[in-house]
Length: 588
Image (cartoon, rainbow, N blue to C red; front, top):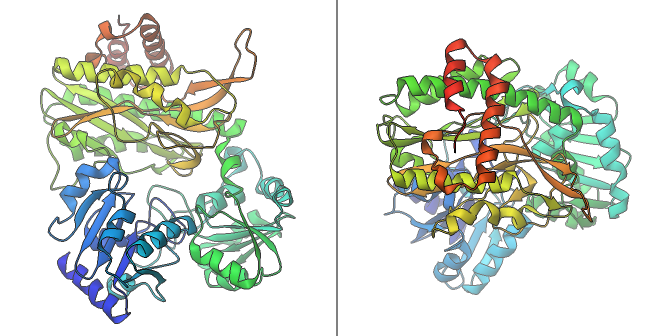
């Protein structure tokens, strides 16, 4: 890594730059990247899905959030980089303190949003320097063995799974643009385009995305900028005459052609270069959220029924795994456990892939929130330890994401206490009723209350949106301490995943996916909402301390376990069904 860092510094000097910002992003502002865009990992060794590095001539730093604080210290050489928590010690403060007077801090305008650039610009100016758009990315110039860009074929997503035709979506979203004083919208989020056109691809591991750009017009017509080699006659027939396929290299010229138009672009999710080109072309830029994000998040009845079916099949696979684990552990390795779970999932129909790389963490590795097992870190599941497995599948009719924590042998009293407090938070959120207009940030404290009472907490959000055979993480909704102005609406799918992590010892997380549903309450003075739990998999009763549970919480737990048993027993083999009967027994 030292050689790579020095090569970048040499290129910066050649380009007349005193520093450079390396975000974990691509020109689409994706969370999960193709190998060709993993610049941060190539430079620093850090493989998490969120982070940024700042490289100066004499110093460098790398930043990430609470999910990766342990992982980043294991992967990044502290002799080369200052390692910082991105919210507690933000990059803007480090830049302000370390960029030299008059320093030119470079960035790639394809890899940052306008919103992000404002932060970097203020930090550079505070240091007495200036933020500069690099003409070419200096890191790319020294990444000599950079992988080729992905070229997976694109396929139609069947109406039987989508529940609404692409033509209807294009018309519905396009007709709403004039209400926002826009003639067209530039859409750069691949999941939005996949949803809008009812297409899926394979350019990103575990997420069925074709990487592309699009311009949607108020009349529902779309110009789609994508590698034509990924398309086919069947796809062309699916798209119809109102979608024009053009090469990726035609996207910038098309932006210039919008000079006399009112163009909607999402400043929080669109590359700064796009807004720069639109501005220079003379377009009136309407800075509003991506118009596909909210309708995509609110799943229709077909999508909801599909995800229920996907969760039944997925729950059967996970239950078979948990029964197998009970018989085989301790002694199984983290990698072997993840591979076994994958094998059960791949026996399902309609599965195309995992929804992300399985987090399979035993003992201290479970305390690494987004742990990714390697041959070097792989360890056996040991007696007296906890095993955390966070996994999911990409099914044609739905995307799953579920975490279970399992005691290997006899847990300690502390483990049972912490697990039960996490369970109490999970139940509090699962059973919440709230008025229309409530945001996820207003509900987040419900999941933390039992932990807070003991002086404990967890350093990640409580819930993220989930797509319908799309991204396992999607917006605009979330449940988090971070303020969010997007209200929860019926049809949204979100995770419910409080946790607790004791560094060097164990990690606990209980994650189910839920969907927002209307709730009837006698005497209610306003429309109310709640959650329907979608995930079906037993919760380890060996980790539950009943004395900490309220009567209503015991009722919820027993009802949930009974539902798991009744739904999944017919879907698993006889031995697993017998294990499931015991694993879901009544408690309290």
